[in-house]
Amino acid sequence: ASGSFVWRVAEDHHAARVAVELGTRREGRVEVRKGLAVGDRIVAGGTHKVVPGGEVVPATNTEPAAGGAPPVEPRRDGA
Picture 1 (tube, helix red, strand yellow):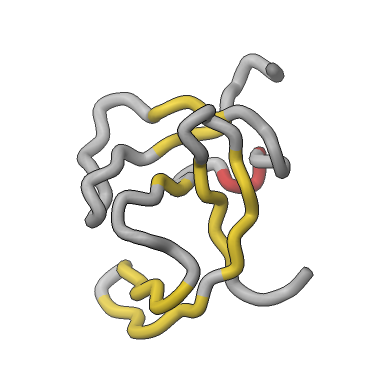
Picture 2 (cartoon, helix red, strand yellow):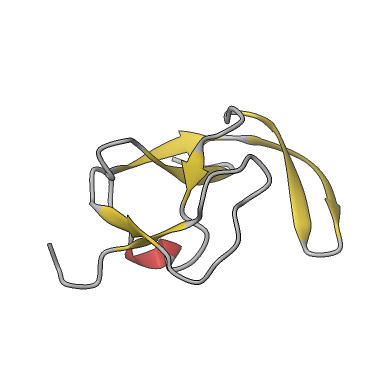
């Protein structure tokens, strides 16, 4: 599959690839115009380690994303 996407994290901490439409890019930020809802949690770092359905855990010592949900990272223990 091609195009822009993010890894959205479900309540059960599993990742799903979600197509998004991007908008304005400015100062290290990118507007997501379609594909996400306020409060959706996405993987912000280590995206190259994520697989569909893979489990992720919340990152520590980070600030909430714009929607108020904390960022998450892929699990590192291979589970």
